[in-house]
Image (cartoon, rainbow, N blue to C red):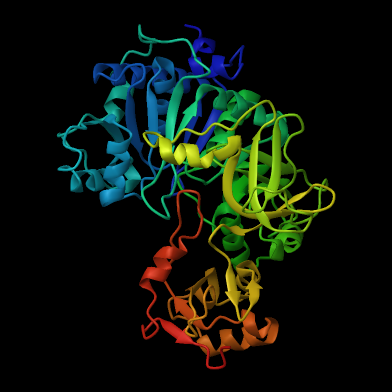
Length: 532
């Protein structure tokens, strides 16, 4: 047995693999953990690969993975790599028609799912009648009984042969290995086809992130999202460093987890950072082993305060599951900039609607392409969307940005987004900072609704807040604080009190769901009496 021969290890250039070395520690929601060694990755990936083949999943076939962050996710993913199958990781919170769409649109021939989400699959059984559940992962802390109706992955991992299956295939840089779906905020999700060369690039990112042998990266982002794979999973394997992966992100436990497992760096997205910042201050906030936070979308309003409060440095970067990359090393570029593209690899610019390049400081759409040729994006089964995404050979990000005179790029807002009030452009993050600093509030999301004035493009502002205690919050007190610290046009018209801020798989605030639930006369909605 030579575990170096596991295709994922060979692909990332790893060699002389120590079988007993811990590769990952998975932290469950109940506080328990599961240690995964290199030998576990080898044996269990082979076991799942054999199971896939037994269910008729071979090279080029797709199957869905529906679960939170568990070791079995990696076994299924790496098992697929071994036989050339295409894994389709689906945000496990997907339900109903959205879940059915992703399974059917990807042409999945089977499903591997964790116990807590099996009911979601059962609910759409009529819509996915030809797609069998090939295995269920049971986790004791979920409290779900084993069903005799489906194969148990737990049993398979105990009893299946650990040797590589006969149909192991050579890694192909141009072959598809995953289909990762976008969040689908404006329609049906689009499946981004991820080819082999992407994982070589992900492995190489360990050097960009600066991982050293003594680093222990942490992530709570879903492995169904490109960020967790690009920042944590593949770079950690390529660099030979142990990584800690939480079952799901929890802003209240992140520092305790980092202290317990001595994590030196972790990955997050902008909305997550505001959530962490909104937690009540503690005397030991700055006493933690984390040196660097690898962040995509740090709110400028809290950038320096976050670094000072938690005694960390922010490594800001920009990327998308479709491709593209820029980064700002700690201390290298201006605070607020997501950086520059790697020299000689990507071209990046900001353009007007007619594709003319913007002047420094002028906002426009961010577009980019590989330095050596045209941008390529493949949305599974959707050539029209693929062509539009790469019109003119440039990848259209949909992000409105600007560049300064020194070539540093800055994010302004998502195309079609942004808040305007009485002619002023309002940055939600500054409002969120003020509200998030209030001890009565533990999370906040600021969004806009059509202005009562009916002015085109104008918004009334809503601040959705999660109370720190069940007794609720004193709306008048919160509005008083806002009136003393915010410009008049930035004071929200409404306070929407909710149990939680809904999030996407990438932990972005799903303000559209809050907007759908918002009612001006709702019992959980409070109006600011002096709103503009």
